[in-house]
Amino acid sequence: MGPPRGRLALLLLALSAALAPGRAAATGVFEVRRKFPRHDGSGKHLANLRAHDARRHGRSLAAAVDLPLGGNGLPTETGLYFTQIGIGTPAKSYYVQVDTGSDILWVNCVFCDTCPRKSGLGIELTLYDPSGSSSGTGVTCGQDFCVATHGGVIPSCVPAAPCQYSISYGDGSSTTGFFVTDFLQYNQVSGNSQTTLANTSITFGCGAKIGGDLGSSSQALDGILGFGQSNSSMLSQLAAAGKVRKVFAHCLDTINGGGIFAIGDVVQPKVSTTPLVPGMPHYNVNLEAIDVGGVKLQLPTNIFDIGESKGTIIDSGTTLAYLPGVVYNAIMSKVFAQYGDMPLKNDQDFQCFRYSGSVDDGFPIITFHFEGGLPLNIHPHDYLFQNGELYCMGFQTGGLQTKDGKDMVLLGDLAFSNRLVLYDLENQVIGWTDYNCSSSIKIKDDKTGSIYTVDAHDISSGWRFQWHKSLFVLLVTALCSYTMF
Image 1 (cartoon, rainbow, N blue to C red):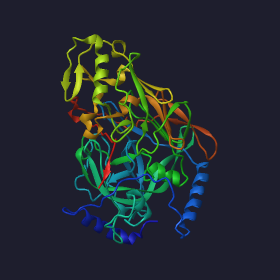
Image 2 (cartoon, one colour; image 1 turned 90 degrees about the vertical axis):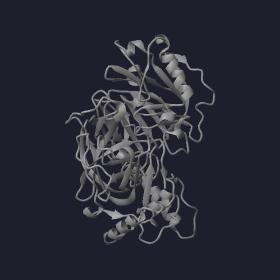
Image 3 (cartoon, one colour; image 1 turned 60 degrees about the vertical axis):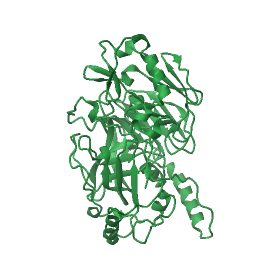
Image 4 (cartoon, helix red, strand yellow; image 1 turned 90 degrees about the horizontal axis):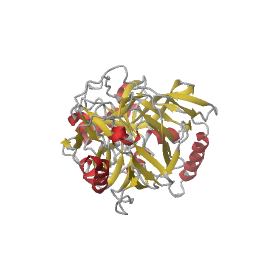
């Protein structure tokens, strides 16, 4: 339970002081905590275990959730996908980017001077005001959520001080603020192509300052909805409350825009899966080999090993795909092998060229092979995108995106668009299948045992994007890692 609303003003004043120039923020790291503390004689341990059992029982009564999508993952379009949620009492609408590469939900708040007030996406931005919601409460640094999120009590924590957060994303953008608790309003699946409004109290970030591309008005949104595995994520909080299962899926449509994003047990289409790497904060998988045109690339045997700043991550918050230099060079060599005399133009670090025919007829399929025999076939129309009169390669070397990612394989929307991707966190697997993301899926409602249809959406279809074709305005929100300060 959060502090009384009468103390919210004190929390906000404390935050202002904490974020003042010259004052160092508390240090901490988002940490996934999967085990209960040892018994300390207080009886709290047994209460936690009973609550845990109650949550497990509640999973059998979990409902399905439909999150309407907007946006388009093509680099020459928005380069991202977003959804609409409601927060507060009375509920106000917020447009947030959906991102599997980060954990928390945060929205820009009224205290933010650097936050954009208008968006080039044609949507109306809303700044969250904790004091304007009758159900909003601040979170203090001594509360359980803050302690768990920071991996312990913050050393500088004093009574009534707010629980701060500061997140830096892989592309250099950042958000700083404090945690609040309020009602989240979402669409609960209630029938075939039907939903009813539901709400649950969750804890999320109230952004007081943003930096980098997040402050740009051209593609501004109200915040980011992280779908990572941490206990601080919206998904984990809804599951802990017995509202949903820790299973979700998305189908990102680059043909018509929008797509499908649903929480719940997908029963159609069926997908094959590969295990998630245990103990990792992101959606890490074991990549075993890469084929180009059916020919296996000869790569160093340890190139896909799991380790610090190594391995393979699947991330819907990233637009493109990033590869270690040796892998990128090998792919480029094979893809353009039959076009040795084709001039490549470097356009802001993209390798571009002129081509008049069908790229699917003229270039090879690239296949990534994962543990358990699961393939990912990336067709030429996926990895080659049209930019004016040129086609450009959507693969990039990891060093261009972040120094820490130069030895990492980071697969974003480019690799997984027009596929149904299933994240089953209960069984720690992820899978996919080619799919028409403008159609619908079947999802099971555990409350009733019924199977319902969930349709595709495009909440951005009512307006038209006016984009510069220059890739200078490309938003590549690579959320492969973050730190808290």
